[in-house]
Image 1 (cartoon, each protein chain N blue to C red):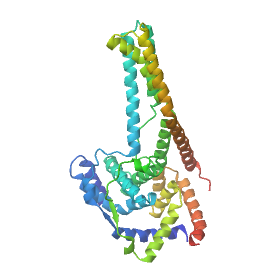
Image 2: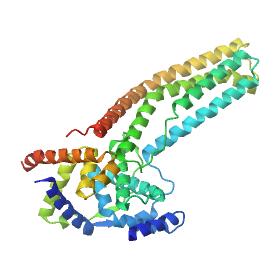
Image 3: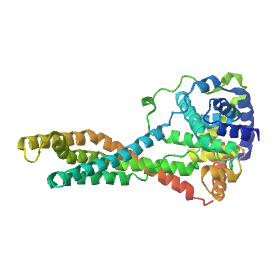
Length: 204
Length: 183
């Protein structure tokens, strides 16, 4: 049998399907199509929101640092936290929405690149968020509750203890997730190289 | 021409209540194409319900930006194959997802309604196609549907030369597989 003979089978199948398939119009009418999104689109949308929130956090840190510029023990950590958030925002600039009108190879490459990017950056994102909280908290307490963390040994000790506990817990609980991120990264990179090979290999 | 006009109507009335019926008519016109893509990329019944919903949703959204440079069937193929391949490759564990609707959108007559010969031939056809990787599967679906190399290259995103090479390789693979399938 040749490939062209399969076309005959395909056409015969088309005839069978023509009479065999019924479209469930009632179900389609009931479907809410306006606001629904696919799985990968949801993940990308969340990532885009996260990226933009990082920029908001950067502005918050910068504004608070400017507010207390003269107290460098408060403002410098806040600026550093803001810079970390700015780095996070910039590192996620490559994330873009999917367009199903792209060619198959193009769209699959975008998805693989996004998955690899998300998996590679996930651990750093968590650390950046933790770092931001630690750097902004002294300034936040100073502005909101007038607590001078660096002048109050007891408050400073509590802050250091809480920060250490939070960081330790985060590291311990994230181990499993990190393994998952690494697995996802490796898988996405393999898919991406398969796609590139598929796209470029045209040797007979 | 009728389909194109139908689509023009959809585009112009995309934010009114009437377009859903027109959309359903387009789906009816392309039900075989959509059914085959869904069936060939997804064999599990629950997953299939999920996939057909995702394809329908993406078609609904994408039709708003339909580019008339493309034939409607080429456009629908591109969206359907893109969703199906993304679905096939995704990592999300099925059971963690919300349950899909109970009803299927494309309902097929029971297998017993077909003759033994038809069922055998269909099994052979699908078995061969399912042995291919997801990208070659897309190429062969389009080839069997008599799409030109130019259309296939536009949908897949390869050069025409590359498409021809891939099809030749699939032909060779078919020859190799025939004997094993017959056995």
